[in-house]
Length: 97
Image (cartoon, rainbow, N blue to C red; front, side):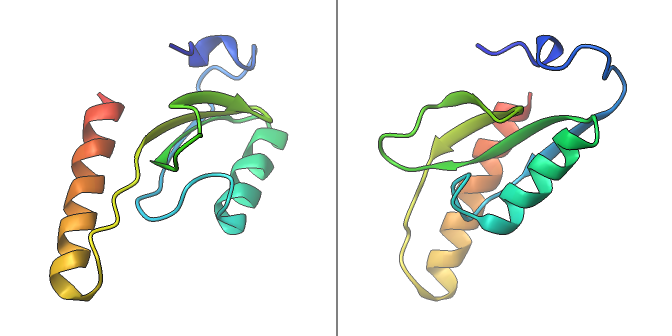
């Protein structure tokens, strides 16, 4: 398990937790740019997001501490969205504990 306290010495108190429910990191360019900009500004960034097959469950990438949960494709429509979003929120909650 990664120890976020060892990532960037001297950044105590300057931490950001980013939560993404719908796209793996670093595939989402918007989230990727935001996370790396925060790291460059001296923040300790932890990101929780879905992961695709072949991606590590835990990883340090360009200063961003990443925790991934298995991606779920529940289909389309309201019910599919509800299942996928509910699953993501439970996974994020469990990881963030």
